[in-house]
Length: 210
Image (cartoon, rainbow, N blue to C red; front, side, top):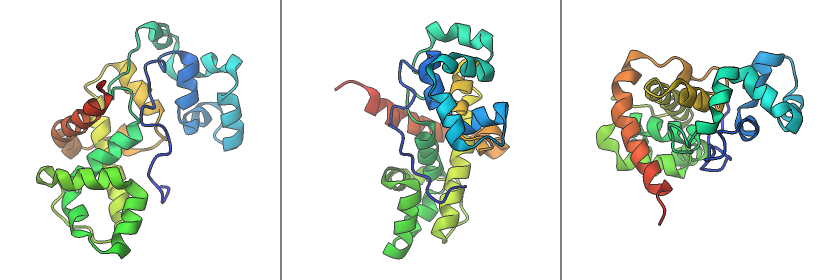
């Protein structure tokens, strides 16, 4: 897992136009294409293929299947209202480990934690500490960052189980291969409803027009 977990993607990653195969091709995680095409392909090569207009629709069909691609005309903003799934996962993971987040107060500990999960997820966790799931405290900021990402992805994956196949697949394809979103545990299924409700309320408030 990368040491830096904050996303550089736009907040509204899966916008209302990303239902179209070409736009979707541009935001699918490169590891998804590499997995299906050739795992030995260099990242730069995959990105080049991903950005080639004449290949984009075929690449999306390769991952989604022609039946789901044909449903593209009815795609809306999807299960996350068009927001970056990585961001949503960090928000959920922050709540999961909010007790530990609250305990890290020194500058020495806060700098790497916020550097990894972002200031938004840090503040969101503290705001919702009453909904924290994990009771065992983690005092190492790097380890805490990794657990926040892991449990956040798992909660996202559990949440997506309730979405349509199309919406679930669209979100998962924008995440790297092998995240916990692909195999959430029973504890994540149990807690995902409450945690993702808080996350979606937060994202929905941001999405609503002023």
